[in-house]
Amino acid sequence: GAGVSQSPSNKVTEKGKDVELRCDPISGHTALYWYRQSLGQGLEFLIYFQGNSAPDKSGLPSDRFSAERTGGSVSTLTIQRTQQEDSAVYLCASTLNQGGNTEAFFGQGTRLTVV
Amino acid sequence: GENVEQHPSTLSVQEGDSAVIKCTYSDSASNYFPWYKQELGKGPQLIIDIRSNVGEKKDQRIAVTLNKTAKHFSLHITETQPEDSAVYFCAASMGGGSYIPTFGRGTSLIVHP
Image 1: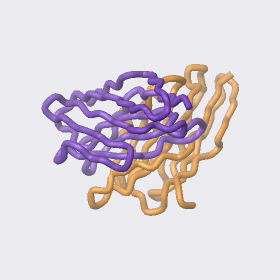
Image 2 (image 1 turned 30 degrees about the vertical axis):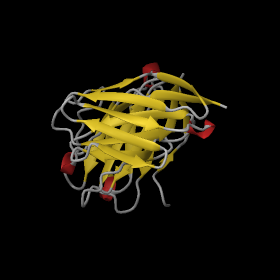
Image 3 (image 1 turned 90 degrees about the vertical axis):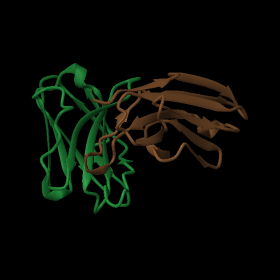
Image 4 (image 1 turned 180 degrees about the horizontal axis):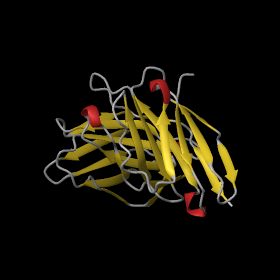
């Protein structure tokens, strides 16, 4: 596709269950980010992947959160033992990050509701 | 780390009026300042950006100004239209290979017809 694709668009899960959120970045983009947007809040940085470098995990709120990026393309954000405070929109973005091109393109997000 | 403050949190204007959103940042090493527009149910979309080697940039009805000395930058929208209603986010980053934008908390702009 032409843009960043995220799936599912909506996810309702029971407290304590694990969830996986998927992001397909724009082809050729070397950088990929995950952000969390809680109701009425800004964009909270979670994790950053750049090429083959070790990811920057400094924004992950707890060890229940993890993410991987396979083959430098698709990324999966996993939340284990979900809590109600995990309810938010999870946004993925990708960037070409070459030649000074640092524009971040966002997906439409996954709205996670923990009940 | 970088800290970005954005004001106001909500802004209500009449169609045709101008709207100004202001942001401050803390890290003097930041050199790239994008602005994003987020419509309901969609991801943020870049509308304009500015780098630290310029003080002002304009694209039709929108403009951004940057004051590196004071560490603040602003978004100006002239002749506002109802379709400008959205949440606007400012961001700051150091660019380069470790580009991780830090976002402000957003401004909800409502343009009344």
